[in-house]
Image (cartoon, rainbow, N blue to C red; front, top):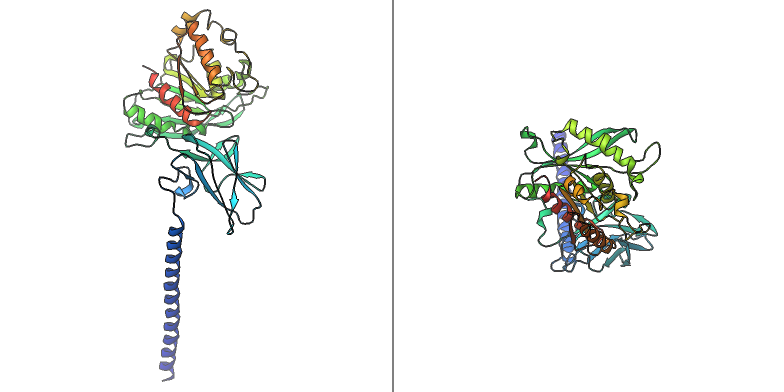
Length: 405
């Protein structure tokens, strides 16, 4: 009987415990539902606003409004001051009683924009945003849609691949990365492809064109639409520094020597020994933005034995930036104005572009006019925007359609 009573007593205790667990679970469920309902009531977003693709898990903030302005919200109850640094413009945020800081910026142009939080004077990346290597550091970014530009988006077309591979640099004497786009069908056939060697800007690296620039999406969509021939695109890190001095950037032929050696003696031989590519000059193109535009101008145009197609996007060497002076085309590219027939014969495509709000635009237009007045066959286009990725995406989108035809 004692044994039976013990069993019943234990069962009773267990039932009471189970009841408490169930009750606690029910209360927790109700509480969570109430919190969710409260959260939903609080999250009354302005009509037409959206969470950009650059947010982590498409979080609610930052949030883009219909006019292109951006709402930021930061939870930092212990902070004394918080600012948003968006494209170099700083916005002071206001703190609520519950420690949440908010601000709405002025309208922004469509495209990709780096930004930072400044918390008590310290500039940091926003944990609500994906991070990208730009401005010589890991940066937050916000993508503002542009109507009618779905050519930069992933679409229902055959997709190529982007891989990161490593090659040995005799310039830096170390292993360095490349990001390589191969078009849809590359792995299933045996044909050889032409190649574009594409260069990033200052403060960025080999990831810029493939991540911020959306190269794979642009090429997939162009090739699927029959607007571009299938091609391989190679994005390298042009921030090289030779053991004997010299840097990959600069706005002089001498300043380009380290990266020219990297490109001609290291990168191209590696690509041609590891990928099925056509190895003649007419099957190679070089292009780039800003610093990479300067590299493409000097290295591409001074190497007609290597490249037959050159694209120069938003370079500052023509003027519009500190340190740029009157640009002497004939001095920088001998024969460019004095032997235009040879120049035009050597290059199948010579393309220049710039943003219409970029401080470089008038200098670029003037130099293109001088080229054309001298008889050079140069293509030129400008696009709405400043010195930023939407302009460079459009530049690649246009340049790629001219190549290898």
